[in-house]
Length: 190
Image 1 (cartoon, rainbow, N blue to C red):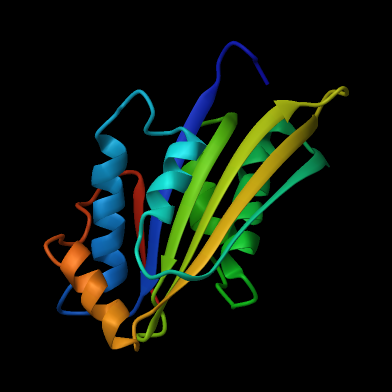
Image 2 (image 1 turned 45 degrees about the vertical axis):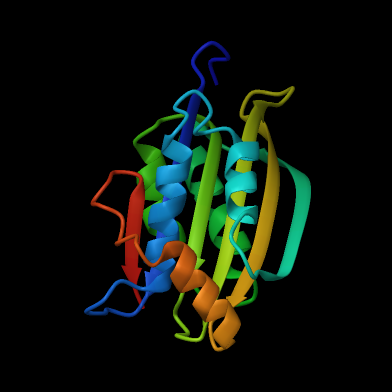
């Protein structure tokens, strides 16, 4: 990896059924995109993403974990490895088959990403939104083709069957529509 050419990327993903009205997950995603777009100089900073996600009210089971992974691979395999880490973290024990492929395709456009933020809002179950934010940082290892990947995962759930939570979500995010078709937004129908 060329240490002078750093590529930082971000991707927002909503998983859920087709709907005639915007899903709550789409509204939340749209609000987060708008919030992160307010300061272009910091909109790809992992801490900014973590702070934005933690501002969502009425979260349950919130957890933050961080780990460093050492991987040896061909340089061209880096987007696939990052996509796999994001898909594994976003699954959280749930089956999100096929998630790594679209993430890998998105990342392959950037060649050698040195950092990647991935936010998933999964509303496959109408009564719950699972949020997963994965922030990855890639650094060169000592040997050629060896990369050290630091992964920070923020996971939380929103219980939409709780009337107070539903009311708060509607009050805060009800005015937002689904995100416009953007190159950094991916909608997956479950």
